Length: 253
Image (tube, rainbow, N blue to C red; front, side, top):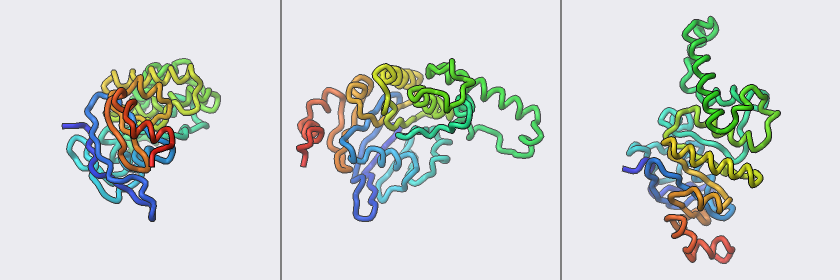
């Protein structure tokens, strides 16, 4: 059984069909890329799967369980994490505090205990800080542990957001344009990090415009155009697909 199964997924905004009858499946442990021209519906597809939008029709299954319409918080408890095109970093917090926020679903929400600072709560805080520190090392940000987020370079903030998503201990992580706005050196660092995440056992689904990065990383690629599935396959298969070539050259009708 595939980890994630999408069947005839669609969403309409008024008369606009943003995603139309898209179907695919993702096996556990791979890097799966979603590509397509601007406006193809890539981020909308992510929003449907990760609970930001409710589908107009279609089925989303995680480990065989229907999850369509569940909230992002509910999906997080099932091991689904997400980053966004635009940074969702709390700039008035330290880097490590941002990562610790990602573990909020595992925090003890008993406010009385928290207010009294009982030993169990203090131990939990210490454990979470230790986990967050290790995650910052994992993403290559050990030198920024105590830095304020607003003092960090943009490339480091992109990796910080990945660390925060990993703090949720996901099985499946969605990365929306992780290399957007990065210089070549930073792009290589994110490329290496994505592979490192996949090698750690987390299934990765990414939207990315850097085709060199996509072809280097991806085990499977889905191509969208005007909200429809245009092609799916390995990098070699997608690269030589005439419909894909036409769409990217702007001649696809």
